Image (spheres, helix red, strand yellow):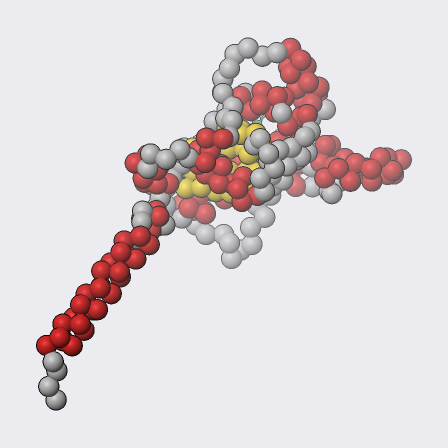
Length: 262
Ligand SMILES: *[C@@H]1O[C@H](CO)[C@@H](O)[C@H](O)[C@H]1NC(C)=O
């Protein structure tokens, strides 16, 4: 069979036309977002983001200035009041993970307080925020952390999102992280306040955080954002190589960070 030259030319031109369209489509779909979905460690991602001149979404978020020295007396007083009712004793109520007994005469008050956070707030307020805990890990979970030195592990930013969290549960979580993590691993703790309206989570908390022995940053989101967006706001400012997202009412055991990173 003989193909006429003009048919041949038409076939060639159509193919060429499609090739050009394919290249254009490829060019537009493979923009730099494909580069950024690459699985990279935190440090590398920060460098990538710096190259990207676009303003980060965190620009709308007002970040607290730390180590500001002028403390207004009202905030100081509110914080002192909160701290006066808080036990920091390592061997205080609830030590070694034990429960506390509440007098039956306080039953009605206890049930009323329960409604605030849907857990036994009265018990939480009695339990020391700096209590000791046993090692709760199951035998399957217990690996030998000695095989890798802390020095070889990457730094961690811990990100905690909360909305109207109770004072004592939040502090207990922070203390458990601070005193049960190797300091060299802990780059920082980042708290994201997802638009709470309880007064103790605003200025008194900001002031309290400045006095903790590790870097703690707090961001008060200007509107209710939900857990995932709030976590992203935290990851935007995190400096650690590894990001660890924790709940706001937790206590961690001694080797948690070391073990997670191994
Ligand atoms: C909390 O407990 C740790 C020991 O686990 C201790 O070193 C630290 O001083 C305590 N902090 C306060 C504020 O009592």
